[in-house]
Length: 248
Image (cartoon, rainbow, N blue to C red; front, side):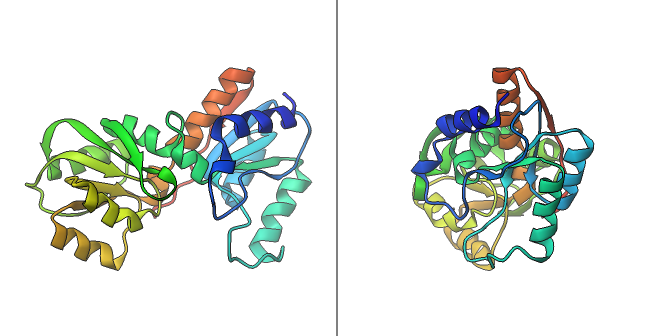
């Protein structure tokens, strides 16, 4: 599979031009012209890049790539080592951030909904990446928290009473705790994201809307995996998802 054709197809389905993002979406580092195997993962850390090279990858597909807004643009230190490794091994790096959060089928939020049994109704919020919907039936927050722990293999931090009844839920994967007020405005019972900030606790306590921080990494494993599987099926190439542990 030609790298250029692969990139064009992903651009077509994710439509990154619709988003004002914190990083460039698409091909960030160009490697070999042909792709027979993709390795996907959440973040383009050195551990993932080394694992991808060991697995024989021609391209690495991630949610968190390089060249973030407001970071030092100089190719030094950790950044230099990562980029040099990719170039030395002729491996391409493809990264998709907000477009991968927002895709209605392959995205992080859609895939998280499938994982947690959430019935997605609609999207809202800045750049339309905040999802909301319902559980199939009313349950207690404590019971749902245990279910999330099992599904994501990560114990969430929960602000709210275990005995609180929940039905309507809003969610946005990763570091989206700033959407808490949007979730409150939607009138949901629970908002799920990856991380928590100091002020999130007070918003949850005073609004009565429970908050669940289920892990930045843990909530963003599923979109890139789904996209990799889709590409493998569409182009008849190989795909392997490698989960590099991150407790955050």
